[in-house]
Image 1 (cartoon, helix red, strand yellow):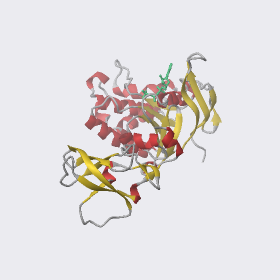
Image 2 (image 1 turned 30 degrees about the horizontal axis):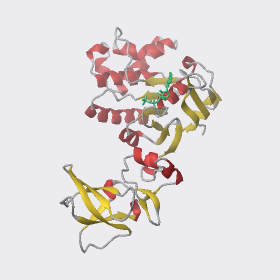
Image 3 (image 1 turned 180 degrees about the vertical axis):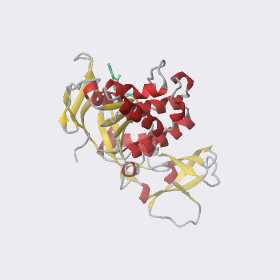
Image 4 (image 1 turned 135 degrees about the horizontal axis):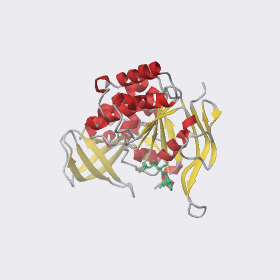
Length: 339
Ligand SMILES: Nc1ncnc2c1ncn2[C@@H]1O[C@H](COP(=O)(O)OP(=O)(O)OP(=O)(O)O)[C@@H](O)[C@H]1O
């Protein structure tokens, strides 16, 4: 099946040649049809620039963008069948909710009955039919964002672009809206591309996750494949792996604090690497303690964090720490270079 959106070796630099900033470098991407794809990475990694190039608001410096298999690199935004939702809801304040949703349909010259039917359907999809006659100012932030989503969906775009749409909402609402976004995407079968710097959001929403670093693709895949197997130190760090010891016989590895185990005396050891260590700090976190230890004899980078559910040892105590083989992620050569 042809990917809905393809980027072929796309680069974008800003500024004049000598002080040019490479926002996106040599990016190849194929966005699968009917799936939820997220572009994930820290601030400045090029997510928004990538999304804007797909929308047509920013031109690539080099490379090609294909929409539905056809070269659209030079196609203006209004000729690309794209729906967009921004961080700021960008609703027209003087228009009613239903007119906001109908705006793009009218602009496309659809018949009046068609406009009414499709706008009503889109508003129903986000559960806001009862508020059709209100103005945006009379709605909460979450409701306004649902209107923006309905407006983008109503035009039946070939791709729905979402630029950090949840970041203006408070933490609880953000979590509710994630589920809402996912439901709307599933029910409509639309191809969606979401930009976010929030790894939890990406893990929950994505069928396909694309992690960017300094404008380059660092790793991509399904969350269930990427999360337990980060390919580089950068990805591991970004996904919350906090321990990066260099183990004899293993080289550089990554392991999450919740997978590091403190062994009590006499406990049989599972397969893995056992280290003698000294507790240096303990932080209470409610459901568990984070125990910081210094692994004796490992040289540099020996500090390890262990999320420990039981009673915690005290600073200064000698402990044995197990790094289970099943949870050790071997990092490639670039891991060393990234330090
Ligand atoms: N119009 C512009 N002019 C100059 N530099 C720009 C412009 N747009 C982006 N950049 C630069 O390109 C790089 C990538 O920016 P971009 O906004 O794509 O990153 P991002 O990952 O979306 O970041 P954020 O999460 O902070 O929005 C940054 O270094 C940024 O300063």
